[in-house]
Length: 232
Ligand code: ADP
Ligand code: MG
Picture 1 (cartoon, rainbow, N blue to C red):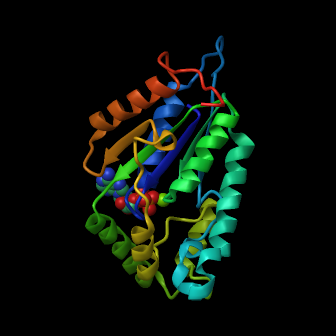
Picture 2 (tube, rainbow, N blue to C red; picture 1 turned 180 degrees about the vertical axis):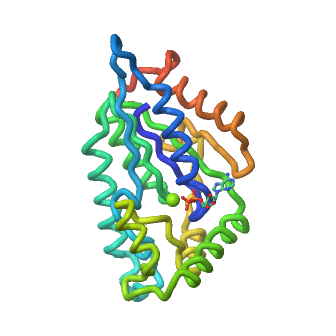
């Protein structure tokens, strides 16, 4: 299906849904000893690439250099590289992240087209208040867990990182969070690069989630899948 671009506000439940999609797809693509699986499955996120939340923080950047926020650009370059390395007609890539810039989603859409594989956008719908609450809870947990060190990561998360080999989902600094919400560019199903557009909201239960995943599968990997023409 090959590229699934997850998008949503910070702390809106993107990783939760990306993991659910990952386990749904793992089952769906399972082969058998006689017929090996047609697809390989990948999940790429800031966590898998060890990109820290602070790269999105413009408050740390002087106003006159804002347009050239180098750390975020570097982060995007490494995400782009990671997607490009694995994306193919036989590799399903779930890109779990903010993906909040429409020009960036357009770039990913073009990349998928270039390797003749379909792409789609999965929007995680969540109210600002709900998402803010999640971030505030995480900030509180961080404060209880210990004082942040100079890189902004607290001792507990550092320990967990070593145990699991992955950075846990950390909180955003409040100013960073508000600013990302302000900068967020909603996907628009009328544009080629944001379609097909699928939506899951916070309240969607297992049955509804499965229904959305089923229709994603049908349009992008199943029988109804249309051939991808690079010049469309
Ligand atoms: P994001 O990846 O957008 O930062 P997460 O997926 O890490 O968000 O979710 C943030 C928190 O909200 C997690 O603690 C998660 O358990 C909880 N959460 C996410 N989605 C839901 C949901 N649909 N219903 C209930 N809790 C959720
Ligand atoms: Mg996440």
